[in-house]
Length: 76
View 1 (tube, rainbow, N blue to C red):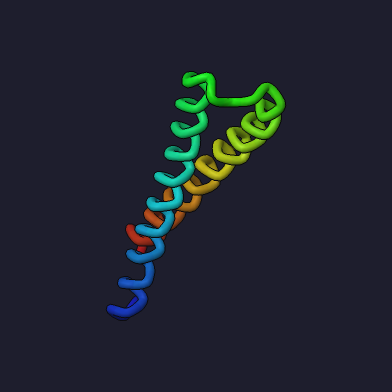
View 2 (tube, rainbow, N blue to C red):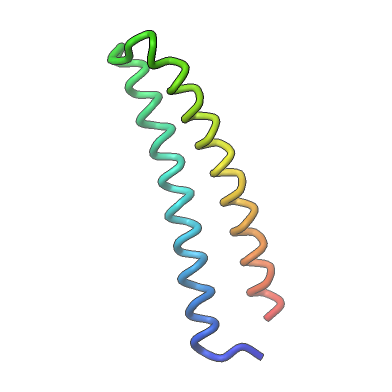
């Protein structure tokens, strides 16, 4: 059985995972708004596409981690 400190640490980790997910979504929104505002140099497009790809992969991994932690919390 988990003690209070372990449960608190798990909750903090879940909060951190959620924050990271919001950060990834925020980055994607920022990149999208810059693209629509025509504030991007054509040479930046490759970098933007790379950042968007990284952001999407991070969001997927964050989602996976959150589901695992939530399932573990339910079991414990």
